Length: 126
Image (cartoon, rainbow, N blue to C red; front, side, top):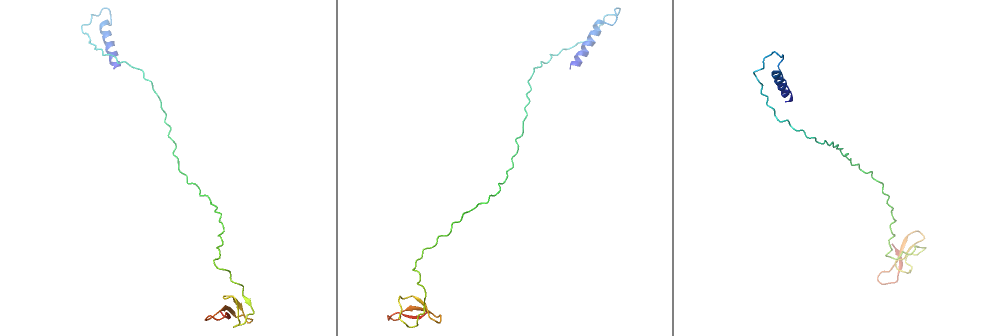
């Protein structure tokens, strides 16, 4: 647009001034229409840099060894009285006490002190 205005102004000056002093005055005039010039306003340029946030990768934690201290199992309480020791050298059919006692003959046969039918306790084979 500025070039066309400048070219029109040069043409107008050349036609009105003439090239030589003896030249007749030009009869044709060029009509130049001037348009308003646009105003330029200064704007401030702001540069914004955006840094991307780094993506975080989720790392699985390494499993740790868990040390479990084991306590020993408690010893159960006895509900029955301990058996008496096995007597040695008992004779089958002889009287004995207490009932339920255990014994072995000289040959190694296991005997138990028991009663039958309300009679006195005797050594019988177990």
